Length: 561
Image (cartoon, rainbow, N blue to C red; front, side):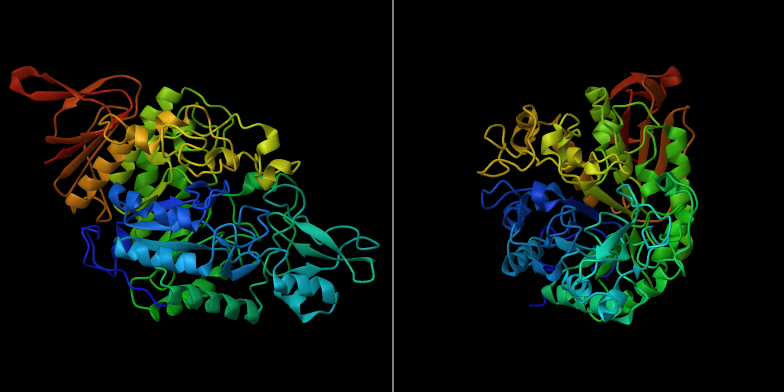
């Protein structure tokens, strides 16, 4: 069932080649349960995604990344996989996946699927047998089973803490009912970590890669790519509140050098299918320089730029992280990626509506008008930078996070833990609106698995289509310009221009971008012919006939030169 992307299509990328399409691609993240519901059960599915592929083509993206749709008990919204070669019935069947891949390719869209290699579900056949067979089972060697500490083994094997809160270890019960060994889970207890030192684990995932490559997928987004390999001996860290250390230090369970051998072997698998399949790393590392290790020429093709995602709407901070990102990727020949939102963080329209420095998971709506204005400006800035950009479903509608979901409807597993992540990821996962009216605003005939706000209809695709002032039409226009102008997206550097404090200005090939990150109007020399702006821009004549332009507060403008 191997598929190949059609090249005879108006929707094919305008820049790059078939083999290096990913270097400047715009990739749209679909969170399947919240995108479109094809069978009316209130839960998004592959049939729903397939029905909306023409919308994505017309939006102007190059590829679609699908969050997990594998068989799963859904303890962590599909990131607990029980069978990597089967579609969960809530999302459809393998035939649905095959049809989606074929139709996407016919429309000129590539398909990237999520892969979850750090851990499985506790209902994975390997783990179920490991528990049932008890101590001494060879299958236990494929996970991290350890005896506990203390007189009766009543204490965890080490002091590691779960990302979702509490200890990273859960004690088992032996087949005879007595307390048994402990197993490691860096996330929920239902997500036991694989032991990547075991050859069977490595062999299994190479086989999984080939299964989906044979289905025709164009690449993989690798979840927790910085996990997998743990430090030898599983040493203690010392102290508590370890979550605060993430992103600042190399931890014994994250970003170990041994992961790179895994990805070099995966790269050879992808090479069997040509030179246009890609690996994308979700790698939370202390620095962009360490992120660059994942995209060396024989490893992955891209890595998410989380340092950029976490940067405030501030010209000086943005310039620093842009320069650092480009500089880190240049020696390894990889493109920089840019992303503002995803399924794990508060949408940037809400982050930018709140004061800076509050992190990426917020509970307050803030000033929504300000947040949207900044989000639109941030989008044009992101799309003007060299490299690949990621768009999270619904951000093209300017959707805010839903910060007032009642506790009884929440499903984020970390919400139910005493400590750990804030547990408010449900707010960015509320199903998106397609129509002005209807019980789920066009999401599906059977309602939606998370309640949508009463204001959702006014933000729908239907409401915004054809409105030149809408965020949706801004995205459509920006992506059209990006396709038309090869200088956008391509390359590995920017040339900074002199600009007033609070303004970013840089030029690319035949192009200038100016971004005013301040809350006031700033007048600057007009750099060229107006192309596009996140807000309406006025002009004023300057001294000696020199032409100036007034940049509104929190606005980005594109110019042709």
